[in-house]
Length: 195
Image (cartoon, rainbow, N blue to C red):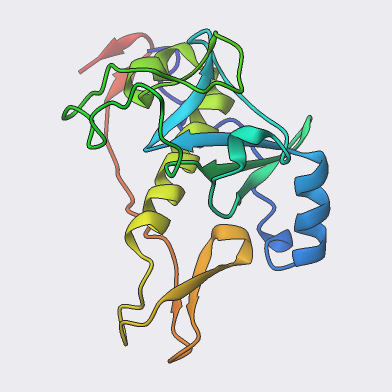
Protein backbone atom coordinates (compact mmCIF):
# COMPACT_ATOMS: atom_id res chain seq x y z
CA UNK A 1 0.00 0.00 0.00
CA UNK A 2 3.03 2.27 -0.01
CA UNK A 3 2.16 3.60 -3.45
CA UNK A 4 -1.56 4.10 -2.91
CA UNK A 5 -1.21 7.88 -3.06
CA UNK A 6 0.36 7.93 -6.52
CA UNK A 7 -1.96 8.99 -9.33
CA UNK A 8 -1.57 6.73 -12.35
CA UNK A 9 -1.54 8.58 -15.70
CA UNK A 10 -1.50 11.98 -14.03
CA UNK A 11 0.99 12.11 -11.21
CA UNK A 12 4.24 12.43 -13.12
CA UNK A 13 4.35 16.24 -13.01
CA UNK A 14 4.10 16.73 -16.79
CA UNK A 15 3.59 20.39 -17.69
CA UNK A 16 0.68 20.29 -20.14
CA UNK A 17 1.26 23.98 -20.97
CA UNK A 18 -2.36 24.62 -21.98
CA UNK A 19 -1.63 28.35 -22.25
CA UNK A 20 0.61 27.68 -25.28
CA UNK A 21 -1.87 25.58 -27.28
CA UNK A 22 -3.43 28.54 -29.11
CA UNK A 23 -0.10 30.04 -30.20
CA UNK A 24 0.52 28.48 -33.63
CA UNK A 25 3.95 30.11 -34.01
CA UNK A 26 5.17 28.85 -30.66
CA UNK A 27 3.78 25.37 -31.37
CA UNK A 28 5.62 25.26 -34.72
CA UNK A 29 8.83 26.26 -32.94
CA UNK A 30 8.34 23.62 -30.23
CA UNK A 31 7.56 20.96 -32.83
CA UNK A 32 10.73 21.73 -34.79
CA UNK A 33 12.91 21.13 -31.73
CA UNK A 34 10.68 18.67 -29.85
CA UNK A 35 9.95 15.00 -30.18
CA UNK A 36 6.98 13.10 -31.52
CA UNK A 37 5.46 9.80 -30.38
CA UNK A 38 4.14 7.89 -33.42
CA UNK A 39 0.91 6.00 -32.72
CA UNK A 40 -0.37 3.44 -35.23
CA UNK A 41 -3.96 2.26 -34.78
CA UNK A 42 -3.76 2.98 -31.07
CA UNK A 43 -0.32 1.39 -30.62
CA UNK A 44 2.45 3.74 -29.47
CA UNK A 45 6.06 3.29 -30.52
CA UNK A 46 7.96 1.46 -27.77
CA UNK A 47 11.70 0.77 -27.50
CA UNK A 48 12.68 -2.68 -26.21
CA UNK A 49 9.32 -2.94 -24.43
CA UNK A 50 10.39 -0.55 -21.66
CA UNK A 51 10.25 3.07 -22.90
CA UNK A 52 8.39 5.16 -25.44
CA UNK A 53 10.03 5.60 -28.82
CA UNK A 54 10.34 9.21 -29.88
CA UNK A 55 11.22 10.58 -33.32
CA UNK A 56 11.88 14.09 -34.60
CA UNK A 57 9.16 15.96 -36.52
CA UNK A 58 10.84 15.41 -39.89
CA UNK A 59 11.17 11.62 -39.45
CA UNK A 60 10.06 9.51 -42.42
CA UNK A 61 7.90 7.56 -39.95
CA UNK A 62 5.58 10.58 -39.74
CA UNK A 63 5.37 11.19 -43.49
CA UNK A 64 1.85 9.72 -43.84
CA UNK A 65 0.66 10.93 -40.46
CA UNK A 66 -2.02 13.31 -39.36
CA UNK A 67 -1.65 16.61 -37.53
CA UNK A 68 0.62 16.35 -34.46
CA UNK A 69 -1.04 16.85 -31.07
CA UNK A 70 0.80 18.71 -28.31
CA UNK A 71 1.11 16.62 -25.13
CA UNK A 72 3.16 18.98 -22.96
CA UNK A 73 6.58 20.16 -21.86
CA UNK A 74 9.12 18.21 -19.87
CA UNK A 75 12.80 18.57 -19.05
CA UNK A 76 13.84 17.30 -22.48
CA UNK A 77 11.59 19.72 -24.38
CA UNK A 78 8.17 19.54 -26.03
CA UNK A 79 6.33 16.26 -26.54
CA UNK A 80 3.84 15.63 -29.34
CA UNK A 81 1.93 12.58 -30.60
CA UNK A 82 0.98 11.85 -34.18
CA UNK A 83 -1.38 9.26 -35.63
CA UNK A 84 0.34 7.26 -38.37
CA UNK A 85 -2.54 4.84 -38.97
CA UNK A 86 -2.47 5.60 -42.72
CA UNK A 87 0.83 3.68 -42.91
CA UNK A 88 0.39 0.08 -44.08
CA UNK A 89 2.95 -2.47 -42.84
CA UNK A 90 4.42 -4.85 -45.39
CA UNK A 91 3.02 -7.76 -43.38
CA UNK A 92 -0.42 -6.31 -42.82
CA UNK A 93 -2.19 -7.49 -39.71
CA UNK A 94 -5.86 -7.42 -38.91
CA UNK A 95 -6.62 -3.66 -38.94
CA UNK A 96 -9.24 -4.03 -36.22
CA UNK A 97 -6.87 -5.75 -33.80
CA UNK A 98 -7.87 -8.92 -32.04
CA UNK A 99 -10.23 -7.82 -29.32
CA UNK A 100 -9.24 -6.49 -25.93
CA UNK A 101 -5.52 -7.07 -26.39
CA UNK A 102 -3.66 -7.17 -29.69
CA UNK A 103 -0.38 -9.01 -29.13
CA UNK A 104 0.87 -8.27 -32.64
CA UNK A 105 3.79 -5.86 -32.91
CA UNK A 106 4.52 -3.81 -36.00
CA UNK A 107 8.01 -2.78 -37.07
CA UNK A 108 8.40 0.32 -39.21
CA UNK A 109 11.14 0.01 -41.86
CA UNK A 110 12.54 3.47 -41.02
CA UNK A 111 13.25 2.50 -37.39
CA UNK A 112 15.71 0.21 -35.57
CA UNK A 113 14.61 -3.39 -34.86
CA UNK A 114 13.93 -2.77 -31.16
CA UNK A 115 11.45 0.06 -31.97
CA UNK A 116 8.01 -1.57 -32.25
CA UNK A 117 4.42 -0.35 -32.32
CA UNK A 118 2.80 -2.25 -29.46
CA UNK A 119 -0.53 -2.47 -27.68
CA UNK A 120 -0.35 -0.23 -24.62
CA UNK A 121 -1.95 -2.86 -22.39
CA UNK A 122 1.02 -5.15 -22.95
CA UNK A 123 3.74 -2.66 -22.01
CA UNK A 124 2.06 -0.26 -19.58
CA UNK A 125 3.57 -1.85 -16.46
CA UNK A 126 7.07 -1.62 -17.96
CA UNK A 127 6.89 2.11 -18.65
CA UNK A 128 7.90 4.89 -16.29
CA UNK A 129 5.03 6.92 -14.78
CA UNK A 130 5.84 9.79 -17.18
CA UNK A 131 5.90 7.52 -20.24
CA UNK A 132 2.66 5.84 -19.13
CA UNK A 133 0.97 9.23 -18.77
CA UNK A 134 2.21 10.42 -22.17
CA UNK A 135 1.20 7.18 -23.92
CA UNK A 136 -2.27 7.07 -22.37
CA UNK A 137 -2.87 10.74 -23.21
CA UNK A 138 -1.64 10.28 -26.78
CA UNK A 139 -3.80 7.22 -27.36
CA UNK A 140 -6.91 8.88 -25.92
CA UNK A 141 -6.63 12.20 -27.75
CA UNK A 142 -5.74 10.60 -31.10
CA UNK A 143 -8.67 8.19 -30.78
CA UNK A 144 -10.96 11.14 -30.04
CA UNK A 145 -9.80 12.83 -33.26
CA UNK A 146 -10.33 9.61 -35.23
CA UNK A 147 -13.95 9.36 -34.10
CA UNK A 148 -14.98 13.04 -33.96
CA UNK A 149 -14.19 14.47 -37.38
CA UNK A 150 -17.67 15.87 -37.88
CA UNK A 151 -19.68 18.45 -35.99
CA UNK A 152 -22.31 17.01 -33.67
CA UNK A 153 -24.42 20.16 -34.15
CA UNK A 154 -24.60 20.41 -37.97
CA UNK A 155 -22.69 17.44 -39.40
CA UNK A 156 -20.02 19.46 -41.24
CA UNK A 157 -16.37 18.45 -41.12
CA UNK A 158 -14.42 19.95 -38.23
CA UNK A 159 -10.80 21.06 -38.08
CA UNK A 160 -8.15 20.57 -35.42
CA UNK A 161 -7.27 23.70 -33.42
CA UNK A 162 -5.54 24.51 -30.13
CA UNK A 163 -2.67 22.10 -30.87
CA UNK A 164 -5.04 19.15 -31.02
CA UNK A 165 -7.12 19.84 -27.90
CA UNK A 166 -10.14 21.25 -29.72
CA UNK A 167 -12.05 20.77 -32.97
CA UNK A 168 -13.92 23.67 -34.55
CA UNK A 169 -16.71 23.71 -37.10
CA UNK A 170 -16.36 26.38 -39.79
CA UNK A 171 -20.01 25.90 -40.84
CA UNK A 172 -21.79 26.65 -37.55
CA UNK A 173 -18.88 27.83 -35.32
CA UNK A 174 -19.43 25.05 -32.78
CA UNK A 175 -16.45 24.17 -30.62
CA UNK A 176 -15.80 20.55 -29.60
CA UNK A 177 -13.52 19.28 -26.84
CA UNK A 178 -12.33 15.83 -25.73
CA UNK A 179 -14.44 14.28 -23.00
CA UNK A 180 -13.16 14.05 -19.48
CA UNK A 181 -14.69 11.12 -17.63
CA UNK A 182 -13.71 11.27 -13.97
CA UNK A 183 -13.21 7.90 -12.34
CA UNK A 184 -12.86 7.30 -8.64
CA UNK A 185 -11.77 4.04 -7.08
CA UNK A 186 -11.56 3.97 -3.31
CA UNK A 187 -9.21 1.84 -1.28
CA UNK A 188 -9.42 2.07 2.51
CA UNK A 189 -5.94 1.69 4.03
CA UNK A 190 -4.20 2.12 7.35
CA UNK A 191 -0.44 1.92 7.09
CA UNK A 192 0.29 -1.10 4.94
CA UNK A 193 -3.07 -2.79 5.65
CA UNK A 194 -6.25 -2.52 3.64
CA UNK A 195 -9.85 -3.09 4.58
